[in-house]
Every structure is written in C-alpha cells, then in structure tokens.
Image 1: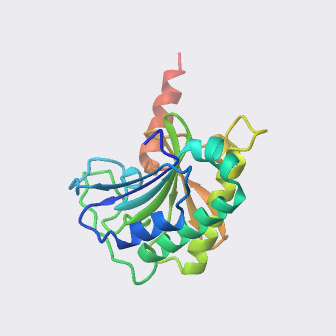
Image 2 (image 1 turned 180 degrees about the horizontal axis):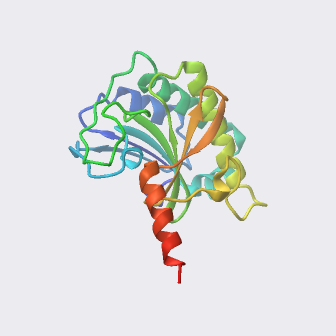
Image 3 (image 1 turned 90 degrees about the vertical axis):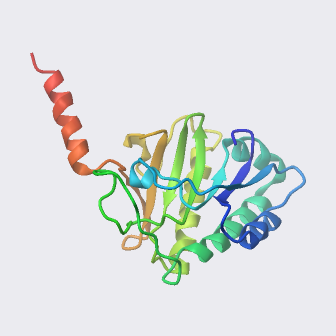
Length: 215
C-alpha cells in the first residue's frame, strides 16, 4: 500500500458497487489506486478505535508529495467529492449498526462511539498515519464538514513549508500503534484529537512513569 497514491479497502462480503463508483469518480491516468477486497478477519484483540473499519479510504503520502503536484487542484476536489459520497453510504441514522466482540479493557462499550463501518486513513510519514473517526449518527452536512476539515489538515501537514506535524492539536498528541486519531465534534464543528487508550490505562502509565523518576 505504501506505493499507492490512494487505496480503498473493504470486506469482500460487501457490495462492490459503491467502491467501483468511487474508483471511477477519482480516476486519473497518473493515479495509482488500489481497490482491495479483504476477508472478514473475525474478532480483533485490539484497541477499539485502532481496529480497521469494514471500509476505509487510504491516502498515501505520495498523493500529496508527488501526484497532486502534477495533477493539480482539480483532482483534490474530485477526491473530496468522492470521499463525501462514499461516506454518505456508511455514516448516518440509516447506516447499519455494529456490535463489537472485544477482550476485556479493549472497548468502553459494545456499542461503539465511532463507526466501525467507515473511516479515512492518511499516511503522514512511514510508520505514522492519521485516522479520521466518524460518529455513526452524523448528518450528511456534518460528514461533509468533517471531510473538508480532515483534507484541509492533511494539506497543511503536507505543505511545502512545514516540517513537523501541526494543526488540529496534533503537535502534542501521542501516537498509538502507528496512528494518530482525530474525530469530528458535532458540537464545536471542529476536529479533535482522540486518545485510543482508556483514561485509566493512560493514568496508570503516567503513575508508573512518575514512579520511575523517584529516587
């Protein structure tokens, strides 16, 4: 996947029509797009928000660093439109609900706060990606705003004058499992950094770290 500009990954038991529509919408002669159907992996032993969603769009670093400089802004607009259209099929009050099967301590609830059906993942640099989490009940307007903000954040991160991750409160965020997580807050209409570790786990880590510094 590292060599692809874009990826669209989904469970092989799902209807392929929405994915073919997305691929057609963002098609470009110079674009390397990998459309991958994967088998259902069954239960995960992983932190809830790090689990791959049933469908996710992957945006490679090379999309911004190489392809977009050649293809121009028009394709950037096509990509945003395509992601919004795909999001509308899996996020919203009418979208299918998901119940988690998890190991103790891995999820706060059997009803996930964020969708397990759809997300967007973008490579920031090798070994580090940014994942957009979306609440299952967001309206189409809220989804559209979330995608706009996420793409704007990616544009700023990959800007030619920026060498470090900035924007959206990411500067002080701590990666877990190679991911930084952001979610759209419908109350503030903004993106917020999400910590995948439960508060009691993070607190315990802080206590252990503090104890290590004691004489």
